[in-house]
Length: 216
Image (cartoon, rainbow, N blue to C red; front, side, top):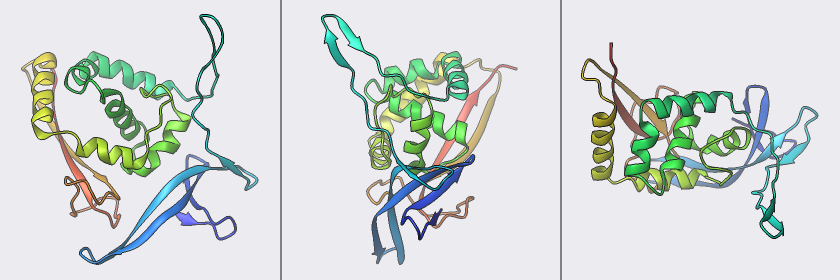
């Protein structure tokens, strides 16, 4: 991500689209001995270099008794619809609803973002969410929100979810294991730590492991 000296925005280009960010803070961390920068997504840059502010959350308005005005929006749905179907087939959606009844939509939305974009930087989620259909149903989920979401998942509840999901979807024939990491700017998430970063980002990260049971 580079700063555009002409506009003053930090620009991140993804699939030919340019997303603009502003710097919220830039402080020196004495313990880690490095500078930490916090960015906020504010909109896009069109092909002519013009800044387009991010869309505001639209609230449905009552215009008559038992009638509402629906606001139409343009969203990419292909990949997300496929992921929805896979999530339902492997009983992931069902088990998330049972284990995380209040936050399952946010968890699934972030998972869809990671899988469909191939990225693991949480600060890019708002720009992805603006262009794609997601389980959030139009609600906003910021980078700090995602940090709070992760830090609020107690270990006991995570283990209970994995156990319930295994029992619901297991075939007993084979298990596959994979690990990944998610970089983060958070300074409050206890799960974040420094280690080998495969994306060569000078950031701490959350390390995740996944065990999948699949019939042969």
